[in-house]
Image (cartoon, rainbow over all chains, first blue to last red; front, side):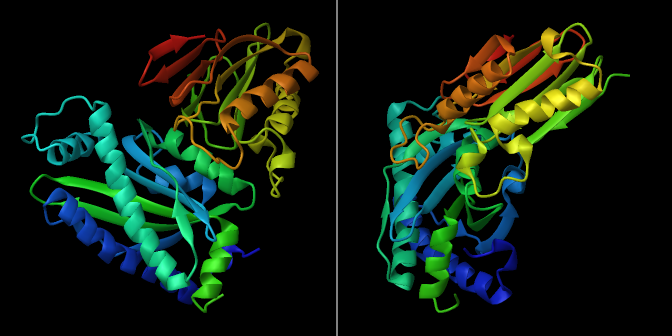
Length: 204
Length: 161
């Protein structure tokens, strides 16, 4: 099993490149979906101790809306797309063609639309990952929740903790200026799959 | 002066009155609270997994229900607690994303709760209250003065155990 603590800068760069290509796909997909110019930050690839994952993204108690998907197939892992409640309300306004500021509570339709956004984002990143590694990856259906970040991520941490003390996270931050929406997109491959990814990128 | 002691994920702390022990944002994890109401000594563990059988990395007793309970009882004993006057309260073990299929560990929240009940029963510790299961995150404040446990969640507000 790969030791996450000993990933070389070269390997982290290769992982960041997945983020870069994923970001360019996601950028286009999200801009089309929202009919707004969405900016995606330069991706980061980082190794974080499992118990520090919530702190790394704003703290365990931060209230967020999250969409979770599982990666299955030749590469497995977790995808979490999350943002503030304000962003979620604005996203719902845009997706449902309502004037900004209309949505006060997310109904089931809004939640479905937000889940779909997660699926589209995940799909574009996984297409990039799949093309780069030449491996088949299937995303699960999306799951929606609104709660404290720490509570949303703890089962992901639990899953990873069976085989590792650290998580390798590819992180994309996205934002849109006019409506002031922003959020985070995290890709957390399982430790076994990280090895598969690095090997197929030729840096294993 | 009373002190507020924070417990992180896969972490445990013991203390005495009038201190408070808190832990935040439990999802599928479980907070195991032990309290000797006579000696006013207590502990809180924020466990991640049912037992050491679930992980290759086993060095931290606070990570597992089956090791956290004996560890906490030992530490509480050093502060003057007796097992015969110690009871338990448990919080957490939710499934945050309802019906996530193909979760490698099944409903891990439920399994954590069950493992916690099993080890407490093995240690002859009575569970006097619980706020477990469901689909929402919970934060916990444990008052070592009187054993009161305050559970906060966005769905249900404040629940006192």
